[in-house]
Length: 400
Length: 136
Ligand SMILES: [Zn+2]
Image (cartoon, rainbow over all chains, first blue to last red; front, side, top):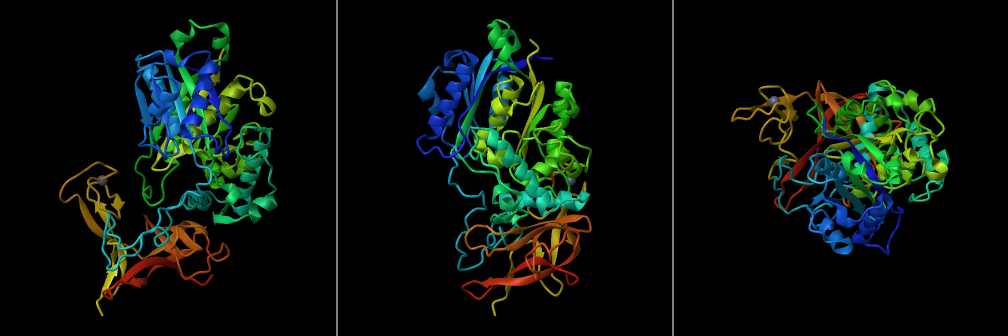
């Protein structure tokens, strides 16, 4: 086995509308914050991985270097749908684990405020003569004519499919999951939204794609998060304070969806998450029962339900009972999304994967303020990007 | 009359409209679009795929009612996944009130086709959807 990897410093910006900051400003704020949190400088970094989805072709990593330090190190600009941030972190982890350097910086950033809901591509004007094109030989855009390609619609169906298979779901159940996350966000000053919402407000809000109303959908916003990773041998040369605050990366896993019947009809976010979780628990040598908190990818309320099951927080098919038991509430035995989740904390796509890890790290360090889960020792962070990609990280408090 | 053209090339028109999947001859995986090799087993070759008819009747195993979509898409509409004897198909549920009282998980549906518009030469494009087999 290669040596352990640690998160030495980590930082997350305020999520929400950030009109005064551009993508590079936000990335710089997160990067400088993470370096400072870890007590290190850009000059000590051996690799930089920058995750940004909307500007994937623009080289955000190099633009960031020009603002905070052009030290000549390799830069990887990564994009992997909503798993972009987790992929950036994994890139830095892989470089350190491979022995190419002993410290690396990963940044995830996105400007999404006012972007509207993630909907299908805009429709081209129907041509004057029908002309089959693309791999389906389609003569007109298919979104809306042959099902839906929009994110709210896809994830709504994923939740409904779970209900069809296992039963027990209804509109109100999904709304109550959202109510939980909005309630959690009241304790998170960095969240895009920090107001609780009643069940009546959530169910009565604008319906986007049944059963997901607007507050049950992830909140598009601006934000960034960054992390400094360090090898075990390098960490041992550092101050006791740095060693005490470092968080162990007990597992870092990225998967894609293997072929399953129907996976191309409705994206399969289940199998790859289950596979990632299985690998992560094995790598970390812990099980779901050992987790003190979980940040999972609640891009829609319907998605949170299926991931209780996929991350094996409950028996297969038992997600509804798991929720009904109160387990995923912050005062329950398995708190899920105490940050407010994507529905209330917000979802700046490229930043989300690292932001979920930021949340878990702060609980493990005992630095989560009012929403601290007391005595947290082990936590799991999960993200999913359609296509599909899934990142799972398991983090452990330092022994010291 | 200048005739008809299907919305997608896996929709076969005629007296008994139906969908055709291309099936991997090695593992049986089914696809509705063109593939360079099989995503399930990796097999590739000139005769790797054969056309098979998909049953017209099925069961609705997931749906959503979409209220917000790209400009030009009429809303609300019901999008669904239909299990046609083991082959999953994406399609709209049509000829039904678009609400959760009338569209139910597990309901039996059957393929139906309809015109979606004419081009400048009078050719009619034909789309497909699934309609309930019993009154709700
Ligand atoms: Zn095959």
